[in-house]
Length: 436
Ligand SMILES: Cc1ncc(COP(=O)(O)O)c(C=O)c1O
Ligand SMILES: [Zn+2]
Image (cartoon, rainbow, N blue to C red):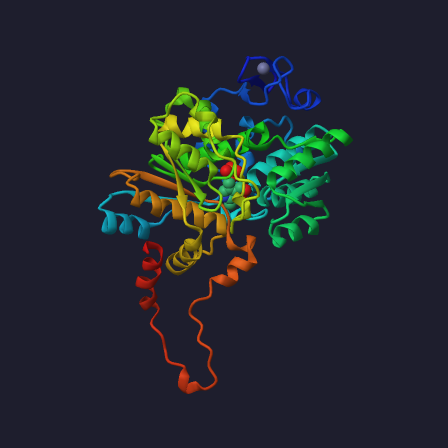
């Protein structure tokens, strides 16, 4: 083995490196499997050394455990070393309203310097790997944020990208992709339709296409969030909450824990609590049905498909969740849950966070954080839990949503109508809006 190799999860066949992986059409040459495990030559103890070295430069601080051979090919803006913050107002809320003693942390992906979402690390690693392997053209289908991030980082690497977005994608996403000079194909149809045309385009022009949620470039990048938690936290999370579209998070966390297994840095897998918006929640529906029936044989392939979902969070609009068998199994193994959050309350969550923390989060983040409130209601957070909420994006992702944040305005024409206000008076109303 040189620096790393790819081991097929289905049959164990070894692919020597990324160039062979790309030449084989991003599949195992023996069984055609697309889900691989990247194994590294470096000893696991090296991870501990890198964590302790505490550089805080970028995701590439973990270079020895990324599928890239030469540091000269790194494409970075300093993403992936974002802060973990302990938001004590959420601890207090859990204690006061539900009698639950827990610590609630958030992972500030909105602070990623590329495009301000948790897709930046995946895109910076992918851009670097593609550059190293001489790739000049790439294609991707995306509900939005992955598209923006890949557009940014591939432009930085000088690689041409064709992006296929669904009909309902946000204009701001389209504008961002376009502004970096990458090509937008807005597909008349939903995300499933965009994926189909992207795949046909890639085949027709013999262009590489992103491997989706199990793409080893993405999984290897995202696993570094676990290394960052180990670097920044005294206690490892017992619960991980994320807004769910396709579900790269749990796959990546599992991989990181596997990479560090012999070091026993992580004593226990966090319980994965995955959150979907109520207008597009096929995975949660599949999960709830299976749970009600005690997880019968075949439950992993029994989930509904929502055609052309209409949701306020296009980022999370995966109506046909092909990764359900993988994600649901991980959630089940971890003792976790899948929940739904009401889209009508998204703006209330965003206002509360801006008021309490002066942080303006984006739509998909309100679903993740909303999932914490929902989990409290459903009894899924326990005494002693250390909760990690993945705040996936800031509000700059969605200018329309930003405008909805307005709630304190009074329209006036005379100074007699303008009375001083008390900021603390808003607090009760903000919490109550979420509890309704
Ligand atoms: C901010 C944000 N949160 C959550 C998700 C869902 O991620 P996944 O596809 O890994 O489920 C996305 C996907 O685009 C996202 O952009
Ligand atoms: Zn195989």
